[in-house]
Image (cartoon, rainbow, N blue to C red; front, side, top):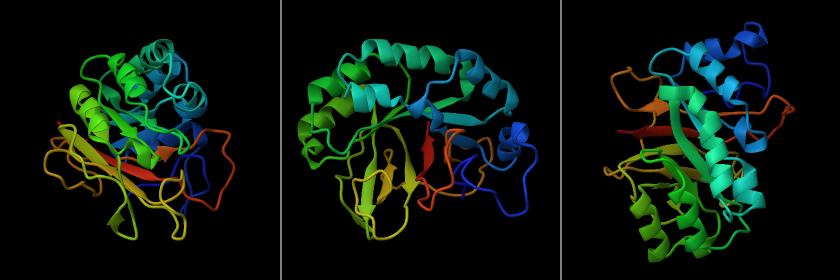
Length: 238
């Protein structure tokens, strides 16, 4: 479906020079999830450079900064959301969904979630990945629906461990990590979001006329080789 990232480990068959990895990746896949922004937000010029280095129809999903989700824990969201979107604007039409992956210790806070979502520009596709069971309430579902934000589904052993809410008109899937790791962890379970059809979509590179595309998290440049693969998303929608 897609590689785990651009900096995790060498791939079979070799690669071109590292400065051309993005171009090589874009030859085979239509989208990538930028995990780098979670650790350190790239400059607007860097985002603009990624736009210029990728072909028409390529989409880059962006994982929101941990400063917003893990440090601020969704509180005081205006400045970090505006900063994220100001930088990511360099992607232009290449900008895909923004992922809010919440820490597993964060209990439900519908008011904080509502506030955070309200600062994203209109028509921004935001996916929310809660990882604490207290989030599964109708109040939280209503917040997601009001803002057109997609809920990330999760399963373990092919059985759902989250509600299968359809809260947006777009969605995607996240492939699982090694067996034996429990759901609700950064490296465990399988997560997805779904649109009105209810069924996540997965597959290889799709024609540019379709809205379905394969997404993999790109590891930050400083990431060292690891035996724990990163999750991989497939986003789809209108």
